[in-house]
Length: 461
Image (cartoon, rainbow, N blue to C red; front, side):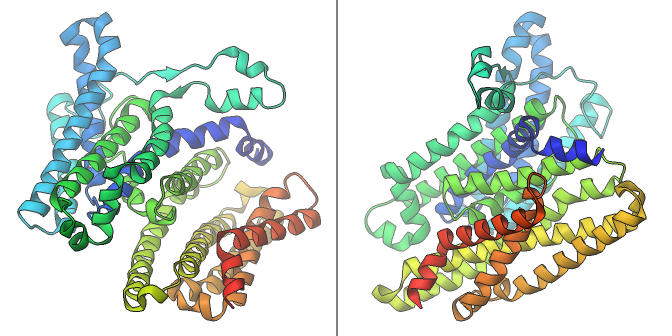
């Protein structure tokens, strides 16, 4: 059974699953990126996603009555998408109104919208279906799935794998990954993107040159709500074909973190979203093992908790670096401190992996029969849990204080390379000998550290 799961992880089917579960994280993450660039973080993403998901299901189900069965099947999904996104836009407008015009606290207003989205969808669902759990009694529809031409599968070497990954993906998945490059173009190649980034970096300076700060921030929050609505629609009409109570399961909160983890760029946000998608898909995949169901179910939640911690730490680090930039003026070394921030993000991601390793080790020790019996499970659990605890403790000082990376950059490099190298070794050992896998993993770890900022640190010493 374990071998089948491991083989499944390194397959086109598993990569296709990662794309599918990444979509409802990536879409609101792009919205969070845009609002964050404008200096108004959209805390209400979770409530907006839930509201859009519920509206899309209900509208698509009733459209078959409104337009007839045949017309409803073709119109219903797109009408559900349209009205679901409109509801999300309305909520984002309310958030902007409370914050920008009525001067309400942005965080409290966003939390209120999250509570409203969770409770209102359940209340209306009970009125329509008599069920507080899901809308299974409604004949809701799905968004279309894209079928690739069979000729692609016949391309030598890569054709079959490519076809297995991208064939039969929801149109929402294709939209999500295309929008990554649309957002990148808008942010860095248009006057609106320049104005938006200027407002986020220094609203007073932007206003002094004639940029309407309030209008830019209104627009950013509305765009953020639009992306959140798309993510919610995928949850109920692409990922599933019904609405479940609180079905977003914290994805709106994860979306607040991914722009920071991705370095504040659309492509980086996509990569960070894919990491969380991997953990989500991994939890589903290892759920087929004969192990306690709590382990695979807990992995996405542990990733979410760690993501919120990382977000808080990164906000603090960004504030300290911004203060240094202001104090230093023209002498501020942006490249050096940018490298420090990227390495700190890598430390945080590796600590997330270490936490999941501790959970996995504890699960192996608590249920050895699900992992091949006590003779093999106990040593494996002790090794995985112990190594993960050690790597967590080694990385903790560099996560708590960014200046430790500057002061003890060699120690930081060693912890990063070893942690990343061991993580990569676990995967490479499935294909090559352990000793070779360890060597290659450490080399790759060193290469990643060097590329993301190590070369800048070495040059600055």
